[in-house]
Length: 365
Image (cartoon, rainbow, N blue to C red; front, side, top):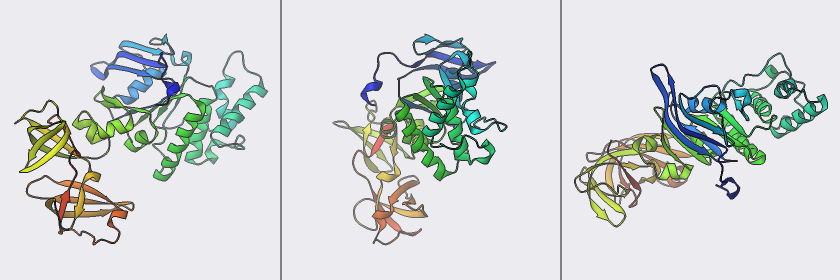
């Protein structure tokens, strides 16, 4: 994270925040400090509490317990309209009877006293330029594509110059290619504006590609907070390892340690894994092995396995493997690595290998 973001006072905080709906607890003891100017994402499956956390920051939901602070001020009981935040919704919530310019300037025109018309027009033009929609002000929203409608929603949110911009799965309705393009544009816009962005998403690729930090949610609790590389390389639980990227999970037994490496055994095979400091000899352990760490060769050193499926995915090929010693494994091979070599068809025997330390030891489960 760049230096200017490391300021003493967070732009927003959740302090031991819990949210209940009757007998249902949607969020439990959430504690989090959001830094000024960072891009933070809440990531998790449906029902994990990520949207509840976002709505409590926005003021659309009130915390049952704990405090919500924004810009150093206790905002726990403040209504949404009194908070220096704006929100972009999944469905954009644009007014079809208004032009693009009228949609973008709507919030400015609700201020009292009302800003001069020329001031509003200049702010709207500036916001449309930032989202690459200059010249679209006179159009109706139903004349725009999905990606253009999303840009209008963004322009309407940033024209008020909020201190925090909240995004509730804003790209869920876009196709994959457009979603990828918008991820790059959104991150570029955030850097240009310097505004704190807080995103809710269930799409791990979206969170990994845009975020400075990611909050992994699990059943209303924070499972882990960290940067994309940290969460991918050093997940603290099987849940995080399974949700951030893909992984092969292997049940093993600890056999001892060699310096910082755990020696474990599974199906008669010896693994040298990172982590597992608390795993003693004879203790159960779950090993996480990423598919891209597995190397395949028709012959040579490694563990003999059989290809059950070969799935071509363009830039890489996915191989499903089985053997008597190990459970079902998935390996991912870049297309460049297959160039000039014999393709491994289903039923073929293959030698699978991985470097020492490629596997990560997790608590058994």
